[in-house]
Length: 434
Length: 147
Image (cartoon, rainbow over all chains, first blue to last red; front, side, top):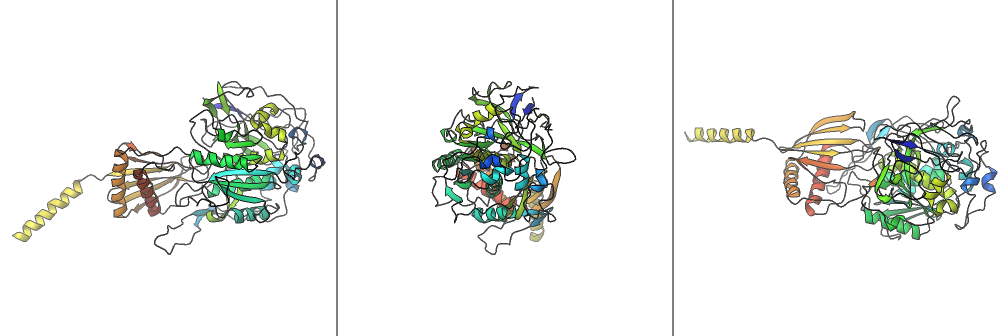
């Protein structure tokens, strides 16, 4: 049975709530609590400047419900991925005057041949494409992501000093240098270890020893780590970044990494990974007060962990279309985005949806469709690349929670459902069909 | 007379070898949202074929290649050992959009997912063999998908 995906895109940014509802044709929207959306604010909107500054990491920004997203009508719920209000013209003007990645169209080898018999040869290929600029429609740049979700003003002023953690497996020695290239190219402020903005630790929260890359395997996590760091940067340029590298992709190692991230003060923890469901709960993924996001996966139907844990905001995927000829930013469900009904996790009281007797997933969705994709930079993989999937959506949503209030993070999954249906969410009723 | 007998014996042995059916195994990598999957068929004599496939089923490349004889022999021996020891891997997490699964099918036996850490030395050996064969095929470990 194909799950029907209902998505909403939220206030400060637009979290697109996607509820699995096996066989459901309509899903009642949760209560509306957020402020009506207004016309697009100028780049340095006062909505955020009025907010308490959270630069010490303890303060809160303006609650999401007080934010003035730039995209949506206060009066008409969005449906079928076509917001009823005109989309802001902020898209072109919000682009940074930065150079932009050269993308690639045909495969070419990028690695030097090893001269040593005891070393494996890197045989990575990348796509070579003509150089593009962020003035092109896709793949999406940081400014596009901000504009699509009404984040442009908030991204300039909020999140200062707050820590967003990314938990992944294995090492990624180029994390800092790749991040520097991305942020500079996207017109984002620098974020380095030297400045204290970027911190890389192992699963115990220590700076050393860091695990080595799993470079000899097809299971190389470096692209994932690059993408995660850069998507959080795109959404929350003022946030500090904490990259936690688990020793392996074993469940226990990654869970230890999440615990380390929480212990080191992350307000949002992004987990772009998952596996088969095995149990009903894991304390590593239950840190009240911290928004823990996880990917619903790219395999269509079927629940996954850690996404299905009750303390996790389970993030699905959409296909995002840029403004064109009278249309604002539009979203529809991405056909491969994960969704499902848990076999282990009881239905939380706050999850008001029919169709799943147990916990349903995902909770919210964001851009994932790979054909449009997002740009990211990873030197070892050949430089600028294009990627899609819920690995894109998950750090984006984590970044949104860092821009949001502490109230939103207090019980993040519940918050999403309580505020779903607000006019400032984008309601997605089309697409899917895996 | 002795030479003739030797030649005859060699001919018989060659005929028997030629008549022995080649064993084969298939390595299947699922690919991911951002990487191309592949299927490698390996024969016991070292001949092999590669087919790369996008998620929508469209072909992304195909070719024949040769696996070094020693690698092929080791691969089939390790397959036998892994099957007899019922080699398993530890449950693991995958990157949502870059992670793949890799299984070997041989004589009706399907290996566990070799992208997860093996529990036994037999599993370790199989993982190493698959890496060597993939490298012999010339395909990259992370073939980015053409979106």
